[in-house]
Image (tube, rainbow, N blue to C red; front, side, top):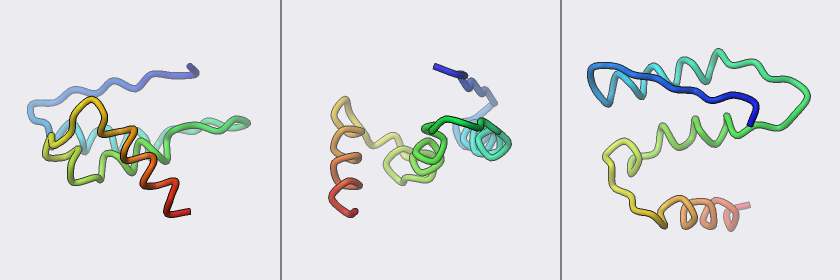
Length: 68
């Protein structure tokens, strides 16, 4: 792990906004990161509405992989 991003705010939507901004401002060079994935997840309807379970991410990643 190179870095860990932790955000907090008064509401979930404000937290998501802060996380999106922080990810936009992250600069890490020389290695691949999961920042693009994190941005996609923050914009995903299921994530925003808390409509996920323990297997959701695995299923999401499988669907994304099949699209390619």
